[in-house]
Length: 193
Image (cartoon, rainbow, N blue to C red; front, top):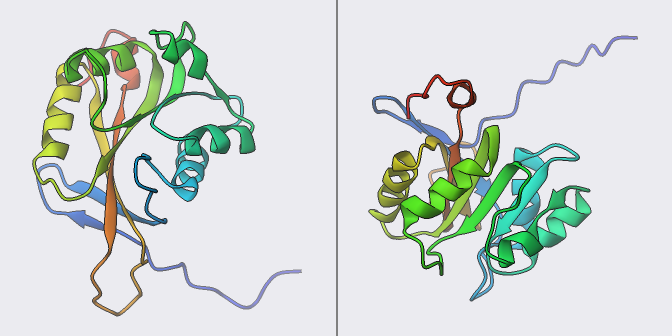
């Protein structure tokens, strides 16, 4: 039996900012993190479910238990202990989540270099930045590019979702930069970062 009621696709949430190349920006409606934490529980769940599959490995470099709880709830694996002991683990991860700024003695380029070496081809590094500093995302992307990671997407997290047909201000609390290790870099192609 077929459904005769046709449903139109939902309105996309987000925008593409013109540029060369265009900058994809997506809006996630999630609560703001508590003071001293990198993300809310909803943000942790969204990251895990949107950027990984079951049995994928995730490295948690964020402050707070939210990502660890999401990893457990989604039946993923993590290398939290290996990270806290100074390394990023021996097995390559699909996702590495970093709260910014980091409390690491290494430079941002060195940190992203370790992330690059610890990612599977096509894996992602999600960098969570407090919203408000216009230059910080650019500095992060430049450091990541020097380490061999490519910019993939910019996500903004807001308390209030945008409503179709209404021009409302978003209450943005977090900028999320998604960086990737391109698959052709692993094959010796070098990848255009």
